[in-house]
Length: 415
Image 1: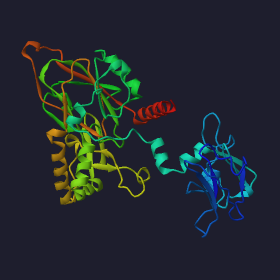
Image 2 (image 1 turned 90 degrees about the horizontal axis):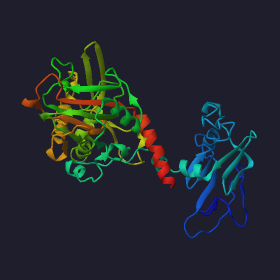
Image 3 (image 1 turned 60 degrees about the vertical axis):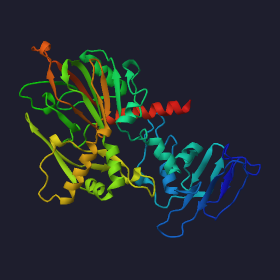
Image 4 (image 1 turned 120 degrees about the vertical axis):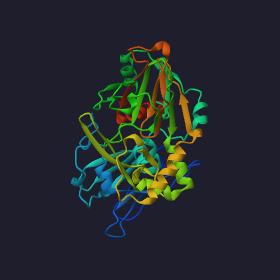
């Protein structure tokens, strides 16, 4: 066991560096600190399936993992930061040389039995020895459940378009985006990259006769999500109002994550049924045949969950207009569970309604937030050939938005 001060990994018993005999048991250095201490230990394996490891603050870091994670220029390209070897290239019995572990103010240096030397900065060890810290480093902005009142109370929910930036709210309207088609693209590029689909990079939502999509009519368009018939539906969506000279046609939004977590709390059996039962969505029209199945409540991967905690909800997949016929073998419990979930979604208290004015744009998470639109009709004085309600929309690549968000967060934390 090696104990160091919070100011570094050195100053141990008046010594700037210390050595651990990796194969000869345990050597101990101790020092006192009024706040906290960092502990590094060598553990020899006690069974054939337990690897020898270095322990940092109580977290075992297997020597094979350390060797595979070497950050030196011959193992990680200095400019691309890409790994230059395969994990399978590291021998199973990889161990440090005798007295090959050195602890210094800057971190830990290991001379391996092969002669290779690896250096692990203190920041690297602190990050990878703490699952909680590592999750926080990679994760998105923490999700906050909201209902209609909560969203209406957010003082900066509406942003001038010149200041638009990614926020922790899954729904962010912007005001007075320039009322021209090209301005949608400029707004989208502030968040990330436009994702092209068979609708194109951008698309129009107008009232059209003989439409191929219900969104292009003037009827009430209930709560739904877009493109769930894709294997990977688009994560973020922008709707920009170019013209709105009709009676009605208000947009409204519901946090489906909030409804799902309420269901988990009040009816856990129904929650489990919706998480376990796949539902097919399809679009078979206008020369396209798209089909894919998703569970209504899609849980995060186990690796994204804190140890001992339930798996968080990653996405919601709910879009009645595009739901394909259910298999005849669908369990009866699914129908009652979906009905209860649908009733939660239709709770007026969860709804945030807003009539988009010309120039307004709204950005929202299409894998979490349901959107809808009330029915509308033309005003008599505005009857004519030009569309009286015209929205232009696009989708955003999720990875590009999240990438930009993590970089901005790191810059803010650095200041």
